[in-house]
Image (cartoon, rainbow, N blue to C red; front, side):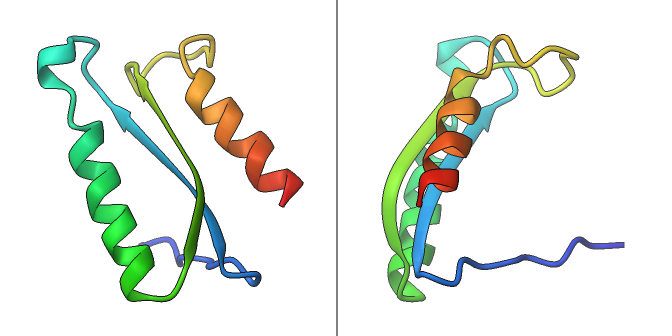
Length: 78
């Protein structure tokens, strides 16, 4: 079952992208960010921050996810 997307009420978004490989040569976060920024611009949302991590999604710990922590903190402040 697909999760329903909840959009922000105030029109502001914080972007977060993660590359599943820890090798910089495989980093896809720039492309992810460009696609999300285009979507936000097309749909009338203001991007107030963008964060990324090069970290495995299977790790049990969030120690390698500073970008996720920063994105969540910024979103909660707004």
